Length: 377
Image (cartoon, helix red, strand yellow):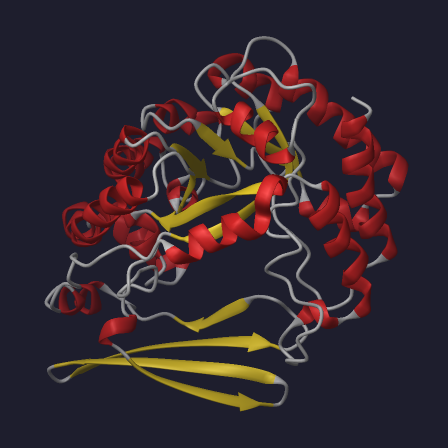
């Protein structure tokens, strides 16, 4: 059975000889160790053995944006003036939008040694900014989906893996416009106004999701953003309002065309699992173990494994920090809990990936353990 076959059988709820092992973002395709760009952390020699391991032995799930020419997820990009400056080994972006006499500004930074972007200033600071933003013209929802990136990637992958289409939900687009504390206050105290923002993004996302699902049927999707409404940020009833009610139409569109919709939500899950299940999704990640999360993988398997393929349940921080014997215990626990009793399927996977320029020998060895212990399982 090829790695692609194993993944597809798992998604369909069919039996496999052993669970797939995915390294999440690390796939040996999107990381180019030969690119000399100083902002490319993967050109450090320490990464090459892991990229080879991902390419040769992991079940590769390569993410591709669910794309149109005027694609999200930056909800303000088409309306913004963007300035980019490189200074002191960092790259800075400043985005501005002028609405009458009001100027909205967002700033972000990327450092050469770290593969992430930090938000220094968010576009919307208060309800007045939000009301002004709502007066802006909507992004057109028409156009033809761009299928070439997905199809070309599938050709390259061959039997080694699959492509996963990646999309934000309305909450992700809305919440990311604010600093976290401002988002939570407005979401709790101004629900009518916040729903107007969610509905604005939903009217853009829904037809795009439908069109892409129809153009690329039968694919795995990842829907990210629900964690913004998870406890302790917002109470469970607002998760239902801001996630379930808005994500369910996306899930239905994806699965109407034979796809598999996977919800991505870090952190505490126990009090919102019923609301996640109510979307009708057929997958969930990363199901972080306590203390990062608040529910065991065995609990999720027992109560929701009949509906969802479970992806997880390893912490990226454990890959980097735990000695081999301790990490091996985590892997064995995840394999046991993810496969015990009736269930749709399980994919062993970390919650994220290291993002520093130098990959330690300990981290590399722990990735190797993931492969070795699963192949022995």
